[in-house]
Length: 509
Ligand code: FAD
Ligand code: DLZ
Ligand code: SF4
Image 1 (tube, rainbow, N blue to C red):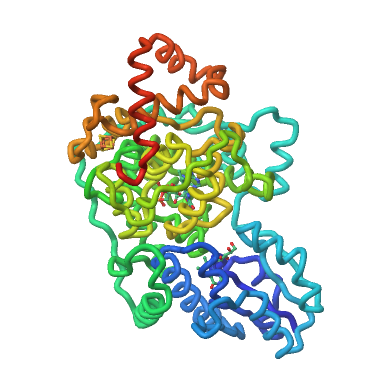
Image 2 (image 1 turned 180 degrees about the vertical axis):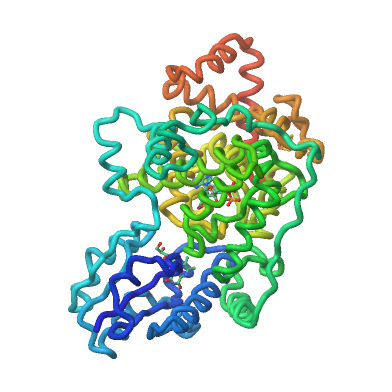
């Protein structure tokens, strides 16, 4: 008999492992283990979501006729690893093979490829994870010979491949990308729909109590846990998004508002990434809304681009460039991550609000991650490995394959521009334009060199000045360097001094 190991981010009935195995002869194994729950300090809600979804999925598999062994988290073995549980199970049942679908993280896949077969004394079959649109090999073939990778061109390939928003081989609406329509701040024009919260069942409650008891030092709170933990709830979340938020998703995709924790975002990434939803079914649901004229093209195209474009693109880059990718630090950043990233206290209203959102829900939307907490880390020159570990820990949707390229590549530009050609650096005026945070802030967003000036402003020019060599030749940065050159020396030196004072005491900001 064979054992199929199903990981915490593989909770899909379409998983390749389930097609390879035979439920009359083989067994499945799911295991809650300390090694996976603590390799970074995952947010409490992330652990709870995964454990509870795993427990529910095991029940569903049993109902479908599978023999499932489930290893519950054992606090007496806080360092237990997946391979140790697997080893015990394989010898108990005299298994002659282990089957696993390629996992999401290099760390674990490398361990499987290099050690498991020998440690277990039986072959380990690794199946391709075909829940994604593009396999790592297909991505490598697409990237081969290209001097620079561009998400936009990759995305067009994915549109052609999936047929999403395509008609007679052409993009519907005559354009591939409607992003130019998607950069509005939100000033209350459309009411934000109520959040769809899920009632906790007894399994959720049991898991929440377990996490509260055994992971108290992990970040975040459990009180506001409202994630769905079964497929039916994930499907309800999808339906709710399509009906109530998708129509405005495009318009307000980049907006940020104090006290509005989700705006028009889908909140589907935790479900997509743990397997409760598949990317294609999500995109098809959005596409149907367009065909039925229930959502405009700028919203539907923008949403589908995030999934078959960005999500697949970052995964392709991850598998193409690991393990070296994780070590990249091309801007030579050496500053430690400020403690405020863990305790959330700062006088900067924008950062405080994004931290609050993050710790309350294990969630922040893309622009909060990219242009607030990410932008600050970029401007302040934080060590990429430290900020990457933070993002991997604090979000319910965070797995290395998607977090690392977003943080190290998109935010920190630590890969030398491999993922994105220009750094997403911005001063406070961007945050002021896209949010109402500055109205709630002690700092003055309009000034840069006074004691109460917005820290983003002087840090921005400090960043521009210190990386002149790396960026001055990038066409989309040239206007910025021209403005910098035009500044009088006293202004430059006042900016430098203000920035240096801030950098010397990042936790006092
Ligand atoms: P929506 O705004 O509703 O977008 C729809 C879907 O598109 C998301 O569910 C997600 O699956 C996909 N998507 C959107 N942008 C991206 C992107 N840049 N990369 C990959 N998928 C994308 N996303 C993760 O899923 N896991 C992570 O660990 C993660 N880490 C990030 C770290 C940083 C520093 C940044 C800037 C972005 C990160 N993202 C990550 C991407 C993005 O922020 C989240 O996917 C998004 O905020 C999830 O919320 P949502 O489901 O409401 O997304
Ligand atoms: C994130 C996570 C956590 C917190 N716990 C478990 C676990 O106990 N068992 C498990 O199989 N998976 C868990 N996961 C998800 C894994 O870390 C993920 O499957 C790997 O990192 C590969 O992507
Ligand atoms: Fe953030 Fe600066 Fe605005 Fe304060 S003034 S909220 S620090 S951008």
